[in-house]
Amino acid sequence: MASVEMLMPKMGESIIEGTILTWLKKEGDSIEADESVLEVATDKVDTEVPATHGGILTKILAKEGDVVAVGSAIAIIETNAAVTKEAPAVPVSSKEEVVQAAPALTASLVTTTVPETAIQSDGRFYSPLVKSIAKEEGITAEELAGIPGSGAEGRVTKQDMLDYLATRSNGGLKSKEVAKTPPSISQPKVGASITGGDELIEMDRMRKMIATRMVESKRISAHVTSFVEADMTNIVLWREKNKEAYKAKYGEGITFTPFFIDAVAKAIRDFPMINISVEGDHILKKKDINIGMAVALPSGNLIVPVIKNADQLNIVGISKKVNDLANRARTNKLTADDVTGGTYTVSNVGSFGNVMGTPIIPQPQVAILAIGAIVKKPAVVETPTGDVIAIRHKMFLSHSYDHRVVDGSLGGMFVRKVADYLEEFDLETAL
Image 1 (tube, helix red, strand yellow):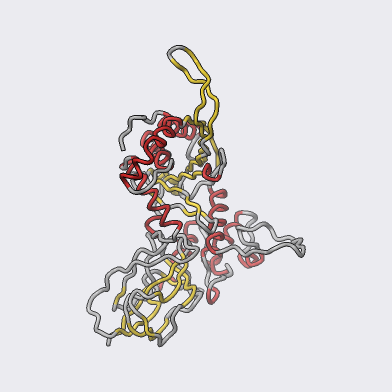
Image 2: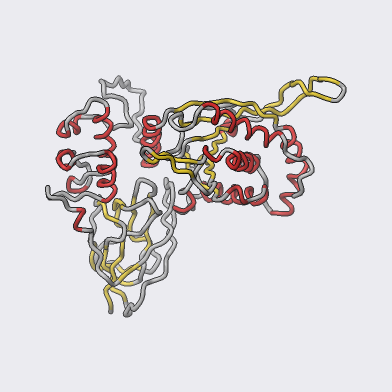
């Protein structure tokens, strides 16, 4: 027999802690390797965590509601055989309203504890994420000690920090008054007028995260939107001509999304200063072109899986990535790696019948492109014998960008270049 510590799994490069939502097993239960043992939530993922070993769950070290650092022990498993080396990584499966899934878990015989630096002189535990936010925002130790915590045992959570920063920037309320301040994602509290026919619906976890991130982005970035109309006739004709042959050859359909992503990737190569993020007083210019695509989930929420190095793929390669990510998004099978690392985002509002939109930038990116519906319109077409009126397939592109670092000239030229690549698509392109 051997005792093995089950550790809080790493759920992506930027995730350093997780909250224990629910233990699916209790102490003394027999568990199989890969069997779901608990549910964990972070600001990026809600997921079921499987056991790294089979045996008896002898001790639960982290209670429901606890915020636990990645790599910290959360349970002890008594195995049936001695363990002499680290167990292989085990993929985990997604939960219902998940935004992502954890990519791997590891087990270790070495005891792992929360770093002592997490415990401050005031006797409170502060997670690495909370401490990082405090450092970045210049929150003093005295301020931090006065922020009311909504987590287990009064711990300060990321949302507590965001709420405090919102009140701090909107009037500098002292930390002891923060508890009276409404959450940053809601309207100021007033007397609600509710009639017998009204229904009060609590937001699910994913909707809360989306709401928080949207408010954060509007607070951080100076949003400006430029619009361009593109002629999609060549692409519409090519797709209509080749879609059956494409399906027969590759076993799946081809949508318009790969063409949009291909054009955006090419335009980013032409205008690399759109592929950046803001780091304090510095601009971080990204080497990789990783394009996120917004996908609507059955729940009505949105998730943004990322096509890595999109500029290195042809139309077929992009199409396969698009179909794979979209299918796994709708069946809650994305991994954490699938939804991280994006440097630019595309949102197809045309799929909802909208001709244009003004999308909100996903932080820390500085721009996002909304694709409108493709509509037949009469248009002036130049010919060798003169101008004629013809029916063309037209579409609006709406480019929202962060005016702190992207001026109107760059934002406007970029979206115009995307339209140019779409309009210049070669009808003789081979499958």
